[in-house]
Length: 339
Image: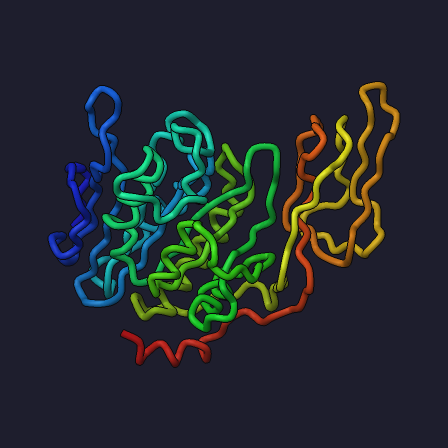
């Protein structure tokens, strides 16, 4: 059964959704300055059989859009008669930012830097706190869908705590170009959810402000792999790539001279220490500064904005590289004993 007539709710009580149905709902989270509701669009697919809750969240940064069609397509592909458990898809987590076509919340704060917020705090504090308590806390597993920021581009990469055996497997299931080991010791949504004992990974789906159907399709394969892995549906884990690059650490590097910036390496390109990675020209076209790789690494993301004030980003360099294999069915046997 597919309910296409969205109703408004005040909290996400998954037990109230009928088994074997897919529902579209609006969750009333705050009121705007007119006293009118600000509502988050959510899809809930509840299977006929019991199982875990997988949460998918998109557009926590309001201009990061690739996750929206990922969730739409995922929901259309689910057969709730065969589904064990529930898939919750939050299409737009940051509704005010989405409507303003901007990264931050409408009080100019990054929601992904202040989790868990405060129930009696600022506008953004209150919003992210209610989002976590009313929605994200209901998940058993979580995938957060992001992209690069304006003026930058990303490879298809994953942020995950690779020291945790479950999140490590969730990351490898995505078949990404790169996995960045990123312990959740920050105030991101992923960090807060992982801190609650809910395995959580972040998918960086390339670039902002547009739909890129190549990475959308790639991420759908990875999320379906998670459904198979968690035994929520029957199917075979697909690994179109044999290995992925694991970065133990990473750093952004910045300019110290303003001007017109040109970044040399391509995404996913490996660079050697001392290799030219960028140069800055003045407005008359004269090269005034060159920048060189401080150590060996791989280009995870880079700036594509030529207008460069001193202190602008150059590249996101992954370091301490190794190759790790894609997950296989043999890796999934342990999950059968998990709650």
